[in-house]
Length: 227
Image 1 (spheres, rainbow, N blue to C red):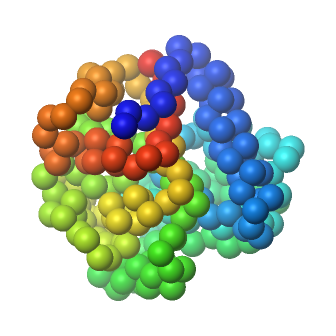
Image 2 (cartoon, rainbow, N blue to C red; image 1 turned 30 degrees about the vertical axis):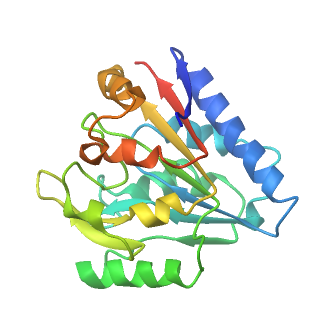
């Protein structure tokens, strides 16, 4: 089953439509339950969406639990920190939220992964209501890279891994992502158009493209800014 794909040429349209989809989902879920859990990705693609979300007039942020999808194993003050971007572009601009859970990069690498895994395990079978993912030119998503051993993880919800350039990272796993009720990809950059086409191909070696492995989920939407 192919995801719904929305393609844009204007940054404003991409950001507003993706933010509206998130807003609508959150408000619908809050009619059914007391809080909503959202996993946030880092990188450049979601920045404009987070800025649009920060301006929402309808989201009741004190009923929102936010989590991180992945993180580079760096200080939170580092320019490479996903936490720093999320804090600057969203957390610092909204009303206090119910909870925010991030990777503690002050801990040793494996301890940081274990601590986050325990937080997610304690939440039961569904760690998140909504997961926001990006995608690299190579088809990686979260910090799950092509041919990585991390793709074979079947039980843990958060692990340590590394990128092809050997940078140490922390990430939620495929089981954690696929347990979510809904998944939105936020993808920016015309250089990713080729990979987007591969995602739309029927069949093929999906195990070599982590983002394509997510498409088995029944509720996926993809917002793509083609520049």
